[in-house]
Image 1 (spheres, helix red, strand yellow):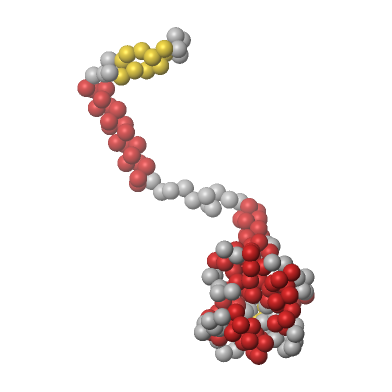
Image 2 (tube, rainbow, N blue to C red):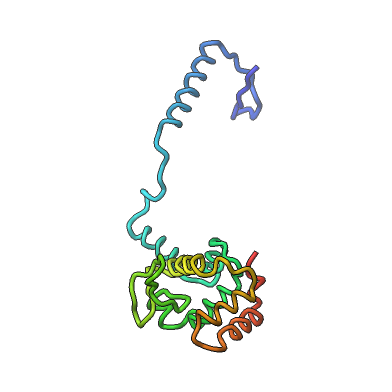
Length: 187
């Protein structure tokens, strides 16, 4: 038995269904399914105006500490809290000219002996198209030089001997990590 809803009486009513009606319903459903599977899916990006696309790109490229934490997490760094502390220290808590002009969070120079994403040198430091490219370049640096590091202590020792010119660099990183509780910002 099939029922349909009567809008006037607000009650369901029995409907007589013939085999022709069932064939018609089946054919309609088949046609809908066939068209659904063969039609092109709608690409939402195609419907965006040029201005909307620019807004999406700007929002993606817009920097925030939370986006940085997510990017560091996404790249699966060992000791991500140290990397976040480095970004904070090297970029003057995201206010330095090198960061603002060059999208350079880590004060890195343009690499000559390893794969890198830098676009060139400005103010004696590498510059990038985006802060995300800088983080990815640091991941390349990390995989080239730090992949054998097994402990935080080894990491800090490497940084002390090879990364920064400042003799108090590691001590300053540890202070940032402790004062801002950076270990708890990552899963």
